[in-house]
Length: 291
Ligand code: CAA
Image (cartoon, rainbow, N blue to C red; front, side):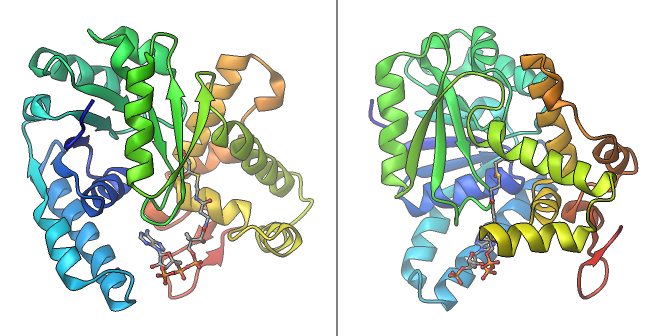
């Protein structure tokens, strides 16, 4: 399977990062979103991230211009039917993802591989709603995409070997490392990471430590680049809660019970960096703990 043209659905935090690394690796990218504002914002983020790489001598200006010229945008989802590989990176809600695949399927070429960047939803279930479960798999990038080395590759129950091998070759072309995961709730990274973040929120909820003492303990005590509460704000507290719910529902074990304090932050709309407030308040010059 020769992959040259990649369609990316969703120009948000993950989608613009995926478009960025695909274009840098030489793929032609067609980036889609539901409104022009989101597309313009996504392309703006890609430009500024590439400019930063140029200013730090991690990329030449010519390579940046060539990569940017490989990215085109469209509001018309069916146009992605003409690509070789689609990476769906829309909102982490199953109904949204299903609707995207349903709209796209009638326009797909026979060989197009469909993938989802979902962080926790069943690949097998998403695949079963398409016409090609054997050409469907999970392609899970980490945030920030241009920086993080890992891509989780998740096979659904029907995914065939040529599809897996084609996606693995793409990961290698990106200069990243793949880890293979079976299709169980939240796969590998989030199966391990989210219970740790949830436990950090319980540690705060039960008064064992403050925001600062919890983050300092994990940063300096275990050499994590960010403390768990800072990382939760970075990922988005709504995403963290959604993943805990997928673990809780999918594995039916009380050890995955989302912390009530995490739920309360989400109910308040304090979703982390993207809304200006979460376990820290980002509205001033320096982040200030909210508890
Ligand atoms: N886009 C592109 N590049 C970025 C970036 C972004 N959003 N954020 C930072 N960078 C680059 C910087 O330009 C910098 O590049 P240089 O080395 O060329 O200077 C480099 O990354 C390091 O950045 P900084 O010096 O500004 O900051 P830092 O040293 O504190 O690193 C970090 C920032 C890489 C985000 C680091 O804090 C880190 O690794 N944090 C943990 C991130 C993590 O765990 N991500 C996984 C989340 S889980 C997930 O994504 C899965 C899921 O489904 C929820």
